[in-house]
Amino acid sequence: MLFSIIFSLLLIILIGITSTILYNQIKVKHDLIFLNERIEKLSSHSTAYNDYIQTKLLDERKAHLLVLMYEIRDVVSKQQFDLHAKLIENSPRNHNVSNSELTKMFSLEQIFIIQRFWTAYHTYLQSHWTSNDGKVKSVFRGNPGDTNSELHKLHQSSKLLVKQFDHWLTELNSSS
Image 1 (cartoon, rainbow, N blue to C red):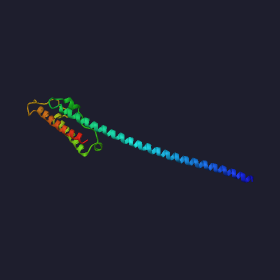
Image 2 (cartoon, rainbow, N blue to C red):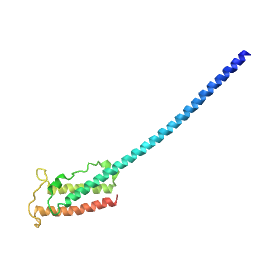
Image 3 (cartoon, one colour):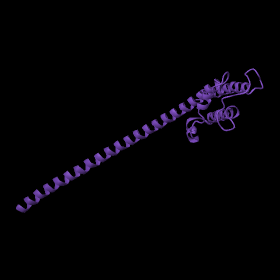
Image 4 (spheres, helix red, strand yellow):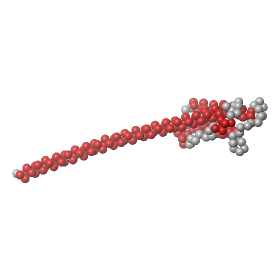
């Protein structure tokens, strides 16, 4: 009889311990599921935020490139009627945007326009503003009225290039 009472008590204690262990295992399992869900949410929020930041960064790079192009257009525009060698000297020579970044920001048609813009600007600089020693010229022969003079050719080339720049910039803005 004493043995059966002790056995019953041990059985009750064992059942209690087993149920406590099972309860703790179930609680730990639920806690792990909850933590995994939180980690997935945080991870997806982190990915979404990272994508948002990358998009904003590309938008800023795109805006910066367009500002550079408008700055160049303005510099060339000022050469139509007067000489502003310092503006030419201080103007940007390239946009420092990689081809892979360009393809993320613009369509192929827009990239082609951007490349033509910069090529035209470099040609303009080479043709009119770069001296034999590679420096920016500040003196041009002739006068604006003489159609054969270096100065007249610079003014005319500037007028034509500004028209072309305006056309390209309009195309870029209309297809954005």
